Image (cartoon, rainbow, N blue to C red; front, side):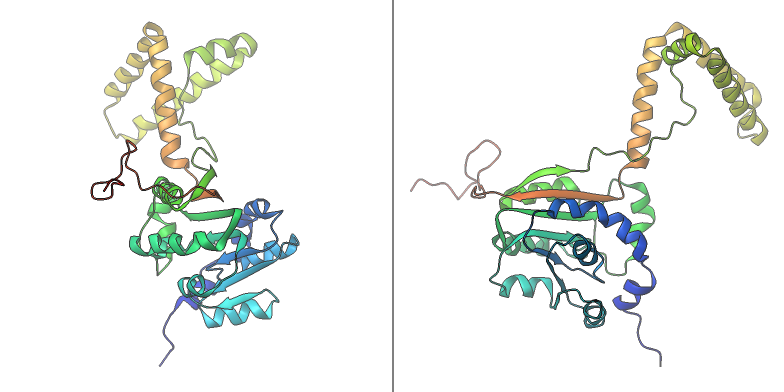
Length: 296
């Protein structure tokens, strides 16, 4: 009887190490000045490898014995233990903590417990970097998330940021505003074309040719009657000349919305610092929640 497919198979057969290196390399810079970094749920040690190449001391924590054995053979320091058990038992503190693609493996109650155990192990002004699948990424929703056999649920970065602040971590940066690429589906701006035609007479002509070819393509597909397409095209042209500013605003909004939908980063990155502030139990208006008032 063949051995059961387990997470070791997923780790070594379905994950491209070079792709992972490329994705994680940008996070090394957050730990340049750290004395020792803790990599929680380190897997096959990709980030440990990157830190070692940068001369940054690090310790990994991984529960899978086969993966741990592989990491140790390559010379990286790793503890074979469950993350929660490790955090409960260790008495050391770390000025850098990296946790990539672990929280989505946990139900919400365990996520809260994770932060409860983590924060005391972070030294003053220490850095914590969290990476999770981004639920705002259409690609991650449709494809990436479901490749991992142990994923439980998405965690929206805004939710994690709120939990971090509640636990005593200051969120110093995220990648929520990043748009890695912008796709313009034949959108156009009359103002832009007017300016372009003055400097490049062929540019406006080329966009007209592309637009006309686009409508001819739709007619060939026969998705809708040709007469309707002509009507729509003519209406858009009249609308652009009659209501130029309104169309420009609308096109820009639609363009932004389209790109935000399809171009959010696949992974959400949250960078935190440990603060000396005591986590607050007050409500939105500053008052203590019901049953927790300080007066006797």
